[in-house]
Amino acid sequence: MKLPGQDAIARQADEHLVTHRVKLPRKLVEHPIRQVGKRLSLALVVLLATAVIVYADADGYTDNSDGSVDLLDAFYYATVTLSTTGYGDITPVSDAARLTNIFVITPLRVLFLIILVGTTLEALTERTREEWRLNRWRSTLRDHTVVVGFGTKGRSAIQTVCATGLRKEQVVVVDPSGKAIEAATAHGYAGVVGDATRSDVLNRAELYRAKQIIIATQRDDTAVLVTLTARQLNRGAKIVVAVREEENAPLLKQSGADAVITSASAAGRLLGLSVLSPAAGMVMEDLISQGSGLDLIERPVIKSEAGRKPREVGDLVVSVLRGHRVLGYDDPAVGELQLTDRLITIVRATPATHVAPDARPLPRD
Image (cartoon, rainbow, N blue to C red):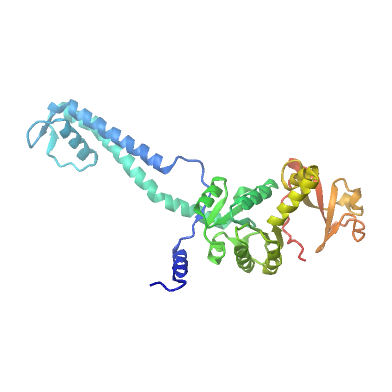
């Protein structure tokens, strides 16, 4: 008879036994099973060729049991010869058979061994090579972006950030699903399989050295736990979290999130705006689609813009970031622009407008 909660305890114990692996992107190579299949086929061809050669010169061989060599004996001789077993019960006795063994069967034996030993060595060295790549990756990874959750929100967030110039090598995906991590590595991102609420899993993603952390989990309670763990491991990183319910946003900010995006309410507002004005909805969708049409970007004030008002700037200024305050373009407190200010502007998407994400934490409420 099982006690209440016994199944849950057993599941937690099983989770602790799981090895949390780091998977790096691989180059497009042939599937390992297909590679082994090709080598096995080649080995069988060599075996068949050797048996045919022996059977074609059967008169040049003698069998200690009955004196003659038939087709079965030819395959038997080919097998024990190529595998270097050599029982000696079937031997070449004629000069032609011996010459054939010297110049044909011996090279085939070497080829057979190369095929089998090569496959074995490759399998043995694969793990060593992977460990070397992993250690090198860890030693060079700095100021990267960790994305927790590779669902629709996580993939869209990565695409948007990479559109600003972030290299794929600087993105690490954490997800409990092995299939999701395989999809991430197929896109060129490094991946960690495991539960992101655990600090050891986040440490495998080198989160303590990350510059930005994007949390896009399926559940809001999971997002809170991941945010708490991430903020404990990295005090200076920018943490942006997506939640479903707006009532959970204050809890996320108390947990250490710099910005909280409410996916359900944001989608609802966009739906409502599209009903009231389809054109306005199209413009908003264009603004949030990075790299095409109109883009909303953050950039510093340049020297030629210092001392001017926001409306006198060439770009369409939406807001001004001054210190820890976000001021509207028409806010009297803005006055003239300063070199320490940053601008939120709307620009036409071109390769020149790709601006790397800001390293500075977002202003807190």
